[in-house]
Length: 358
Image 1: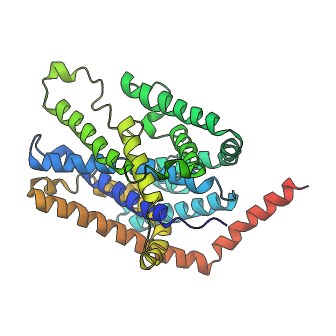
Image 2: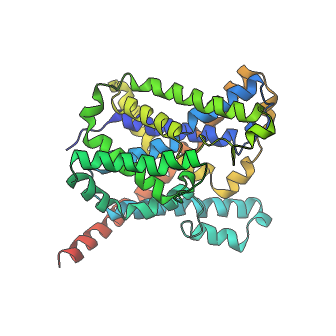
Image 3: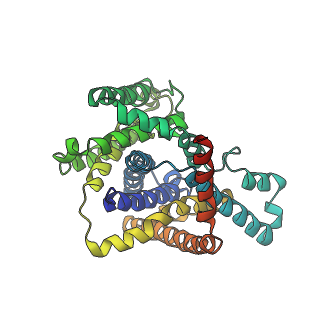
């Protein structure tokens, strides 16, 4: 049995915290409200860019963990029940507190979160899940040379070329897609399979992270402050600011290698083991459409704070959201345990195994 990598679990927690920061800055209205060139502008954009790689980290973790794990269909069904629990309960809550805000469409969204794309990441992951057994076969049977070539091809075709072309050439939706998550799954599996090849650079690779942040921030600043005839060269804003951007991928890659080789002290392991499984709920709760709409432009006043107060406010708000959502999911987990949801979903695996062996 493979020993649990607590560094990866710690990265799962950090990544979700960074995703919350992204949403506070973007959907919360801070980025659109800070004055270009001001101290708050630089602080907000550096935090935005530093956090942008979090989704890529999350997807890399799936491949890293999944390559040597037993593929259980009960896992996706359990995850789907978790999603349904929040979509229905939050819709019910708003139906009680604000009946006029809940429509028939709201209930349909809650009942069919995948087909109605309530959570883009879960929809993409749900599709990818059914291809994972084939990705595993691919990762375990290709030679190192073949896998290396495949990974480089993925990065060139889906990462480098679209960035230079400033166009979504191969329809990855700039990372918001099953195709990009699947690519990151394969890359994460490759890193796990050839961990020893990356060990000697694990301490140096972390320096790539601030370098990528600087390059992406500098590009953003140049676009925001240059004359319109120069910025017209860029078709749709900063080409480096997308999940498929080379700088965003490399920042995720460097963080991933750093955390995967991190030595976690024993007293931290228990805390990480407790918090990490709750992290996905943070995403499910705070991006649920009703809460998401409430959060839109909610933090615009932060833009007028002093840089120190702005930074403290962003981090404290993100921490509050994270702790609140995790606490709610702790209760949800207790309810699922009382109802024996996990053991019930595991019967799916028993049924599928029996059918396959007939």
